[in-house]
Amino acid sequence: MNLDYTNIYNNLIKLTRSKYLYLNLKKEETFSDRIIFLLLHLSFFLKIYKNNNSKKILQEIHDFFFYQIELSIREIGYGDVSINKNMKKYVNYFYNILSKIDNWDNCNLNKKNEILKEFINYPINISIYADYFDKLCFFFKNNTLNYFAKDIEEIKI
Image 1 (cartoon, one colour):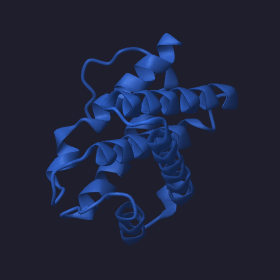
Image 2 (cartoon, one colour):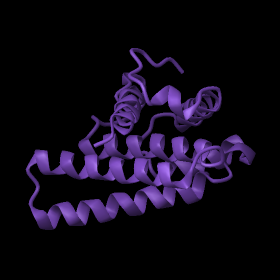
Image 3 (cartoon, one colour):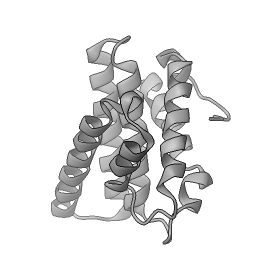
């Protein structure tokens, strides 16, 4: 286990746990909602850093994240069959998110809202999330990958 990847994972988890993300949902958040938000954060993270970092490092980050997600599902108490089914679902979500956000910077607000509606369940106002992920991209662009490889006390976007 690489400490750098652990810190990257923990820092993106901190972003995912932001109460702000869940206040705009019509229903109470679920484990699945949290995983989707984590996958959205990871997708934007990899999208921003793919051009300036080695593919090997980014693949290792990807693998580490999905290993951690699998461990989380196991800790909840799912059986092996359910774990495989859920992991397949989350991997498909992840690649679907990646393909949809590839051109995020060139999308207008309506297109961004459409993209996010596919993944975020029961939002009150989807535009809040489009604004949030725009700010997140700006934040990622203004910090290097190494910035996330250390423990960050408080992340403000």
